Image 1 (cartoon, rainbow, N blue to C red):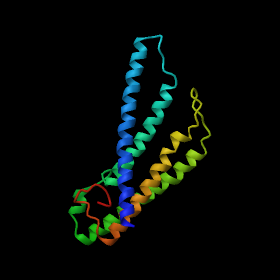
Image 2: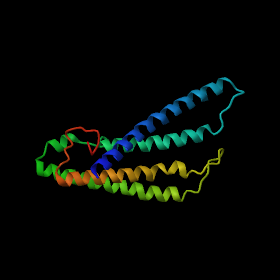
Image 3: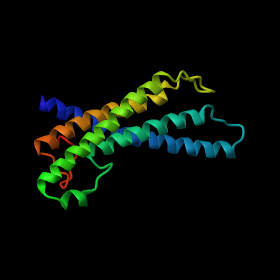
Image 4: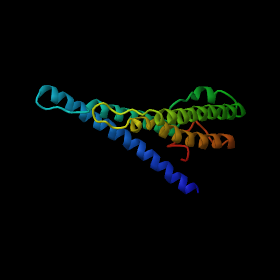
Length: 169
């Protein structure tokens, strides 16, 4: 079971990393194409801003998942290393519970928002649910990592002073 979880963790890490890189690369080329089309008035790109919105939404949320996975999104190491071990474990558990609460809110409210949007893009006429789906997808992944972090903190095995590639090593 642990091997399966580690494989899933590695897959999430790779998808997040390469997803952000791909989205940023496409955004760069779209920006470049936008500059070229202004210089050459008979060439135009249709739906440009709609594609940019989609890429930015997914890049932002999968980037947040990547940081959440590594425990690098919010971290006050000075506070954790300044207190005794029992207090540190209690703080880690409290932090993990707060992270889980935030991730659950993101998942539930993000799903409600995406499911209830009913919007389409003005030019390409795509359903905006593909844009908004980035919110509950990120929330679901954050919930999974928050639960894993909470379990590790409750067992006393999670030490935030030593950086790692993720919760599972």
